[in-house]
Image 1 (cartoon, helix red, strand yellow):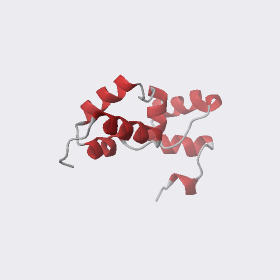
Image 2 (cartoon, rainbow, N blue to C red):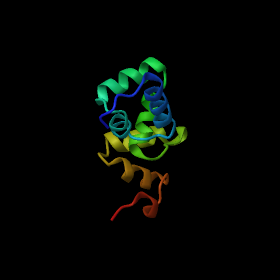
Image 3 (spheres, rainbow, N blue to C red):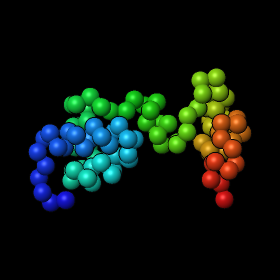
Image 4 (cartoon, rainbow, N blue to C red):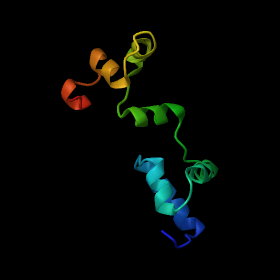
Length: 100
């Protein structure tokens, strides 16, 4: 995208992208800027993800509060991967985790 977007169009694309939980790289490509520039702009308009939301987005699933301590214990002490921990704790099933 070589055309320069006006600030309102850029703002709308960022808000829509964050609202739809799109990856930041995709949003940055759409508006034609760097990832850092996107994060700064998103921060200025107040639509950034909290660290908890960002972690859930990367994982692709939600860890319930009552299983969070066990999940982190398995991750750190057991050295399991995120999806393996989720299967062990019953958060994900084998079919939904996409293991091959």
